[in-house]
Image 1 (cartoon, rainbow, N blue to C red):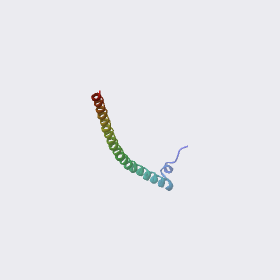
Image 2 (image 1 turned 30 degrees about the horizontal axis):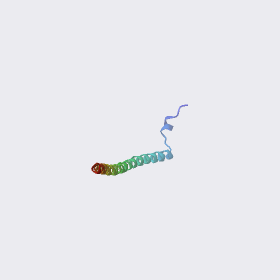
Image 3 (image 1 turned 30 degrees about the vertical axis):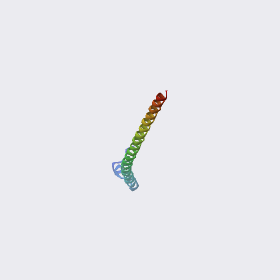
Image 4 (image 1 turned 90 degrees about the vertical axis):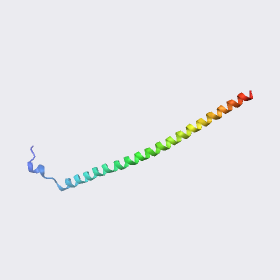
Length: 80
């Protein structure tokens, strides 16, 4: 069954409003992820900085423990 050409061009008003709503939703979806992505990147950078700081502290603590062990070994050698 063929659809008359004039009928295919007619667009009911409710479909037109749905189209504009869909376009608005797409625009909203385009804006929000960009903002959240920027926030996620900033949060990730903050976490990385804190992790780097924690790792540096752990490394310093390990070095101090190694120095203490070496001192204890030297003391034991001196006592013998």
